[in-house]
Length: 222
Length: 222
Image 1 (cartoon, rainbow over the protein chains, first blue to last red):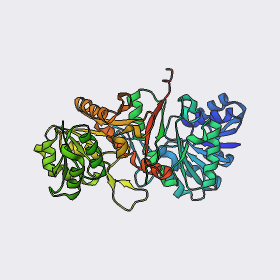
Image 2: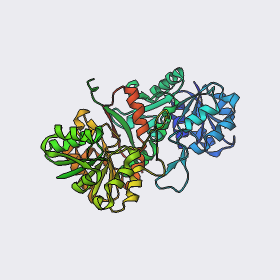
Image 3: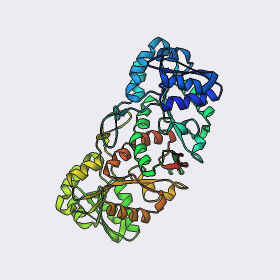
């Protein structure tokens, strides 16, 4: 499948490598077609990798990943262009981390809104699915990095788009039983609002290789 | 031990029953000394249970629990009175749910502040420990309700107070290895910001008997 990845940071690179290794054709999109990091990525990704502008990557992909930093996502999507985005599936992996001096770090949007909803409102035809933002990128593409069962959350308004995203998660190694659909795109609020706890836990564990698992008990008797 | 519980809702009642059953002396505190729910609670809790005003419960307890609704916590603590609160340990179980018509429900404070921090700022001598707010109250006092290992998070500035709270968690049945200290009281932001996801998951599972577990992998090689 042709996949466009917006953002050439470590998250975009890691997802791109994994998908290229699985035989998919990947175009990394960045602000400038001459992005050196993207060119380096292509050299190591091999024949399945290419790079271009945000607009070129958006036009190329049948499915798109938003791997830009949360604060730059709307600008990147604007550069990608409404026509290139069309009614594609956008897997929104970004976290709206506010790059302020707040301790602990804070979010630039939360509680009554979310980055995923901002994107969905700006591009109503786009099928935004929030996914994978609650863990580090090595676990995203290789859940076996953390032994045993643990969960990935998805949220989005379009059921068919969520089915496609579940298929991509299956490629990465996620068992269907470990994918938790929290509902419509407003569910992205809860997924993005995990970030402060995630950062605290990273500090407490001194190890970014952890993930959330939902342990369940029997339903209460009515 | 003498324990004061502020708030006579289901959370306060459940924690109070459990502690009374373990042989502790419990005073439930509410706005009015004539609170009917508290009087009913005392009838069923037996000889270890009593009830009074917020001020009486705060004066009574060697350790205090804040089980009021988040929006009413500061008012309840004000009624309890600075002198009665003193430099006691306050286990803050409350979530600052905004009782607006927002869908999904939102928080009245988050991101750059938290309810636990508001309480700590208002009563600098009080040793506030955020704990137990990330699960339903039946699991709080009986973690075995959810099979296997799962986690309770604590956050607070005072190490000795956190040690005391860990002891209380041990009474409830929490294994030491399942208690995760996320650091100082600012860590309460992340713990309170889990609430929107918790609510989404409750909806997705149609079952409130679940809890978060942290699955861990090996540390990345440097």
